[in-house]
Amino acid sequence: MRESRPCLFFVVSESSQFPAATLAVVATPIGNLADISFRAIEILKAADVLLCEDTRHSKRLLDHYSIQVPTTSYGAHNLKTKLVWIVEQLALGKRVALVSDAGTPGISDPGTLLVSAALQAGYNVITIPGPAALIPALVLSGLRTDKFVFEGFLPHKKGRQTRLKLLATEPRTIVLYESVHRIQKTLSELHEYLGNRKVAVCRELTKVYEEIVRGNLSDAIAHFEKHEPRGEFVVVVAGTDDSSHDDSDESSF
Image (cartoon, rainbow, N blue to C red; front, side, top):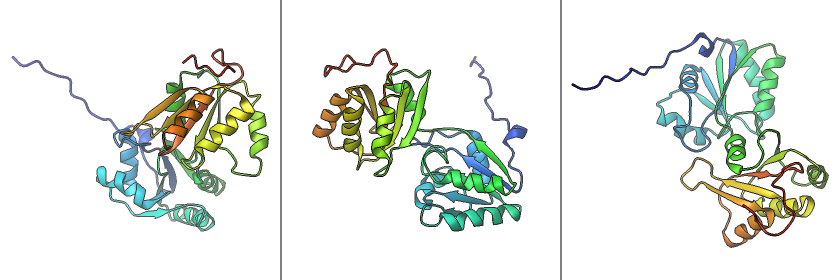
C-alpha cells in the first residue's frame, strides 16, 4: 500500500492582500528565479501597474511566472516625472507594485525616493520581503554577523577618501556593493586605508557562476589580477573588533 503524503498548499492571509491606492515594494530574486515567495507572485499578479528598474530585465521574471501586468520603468533619467506619476496613480486608486532589477527595492537604488513620495502624499505602502544580496554575502563570508554596517556603493569621487577613512575605524563588519568596473580599485583602496583585513568577495550570488573569494584583502587583489572580474559584487570586510582580523600578508582562512 502506497504511503500517503501530507498535502502542501499555500494559504493567503489577510496581511498579503493588496488594497487599492497602495504601493507594494516587492523583493525579487537576485539571480535564481526560484528564490521568490508565493506572496510576491500573488502581489505582482494583482498589481494594476508594475514599476521596474528595467522593464527588459524584469520581463524574464514575469514571463517565467506567467505574470501579465502593464510595466513602466524608473531610474535616474526619469525619476522626477515618476515621483509625480506614482502619486497620480495612487490617487486614482491603482495598486502599484515596485521591483528592482534584483533584490529588494530601495536598497542602493532610487526606489527609496518613490516610497518616500508615496508616504509623504499619505498613501499606504506595504513590503513583500525577500532577497537582498548583502544578507547571503554576510552569512557566507565567515566573518562576524552579530553586528555589521551596510555601506552600499562607495562614492565614486567626492567624499570617497573621507568615507574610507571612517571605515578604517569601523568596529563592525562592513558590507559594500561594487560593480565589475570598480571592484579592483575598491579592493586596492580598502587595503590602503584599512590594512590587510579579512575579506569575502562574493560574485554572482545564487547564479550558475557564483564565486566567493575569502582571505585577506591582498589575496583578493591577487585573485582578480589573475582572473578577470565578471558580474556584480558584494564585498564583506572585517571590522576592527573582528577576532579573525589579521594585518599580516598571510591568510589564515
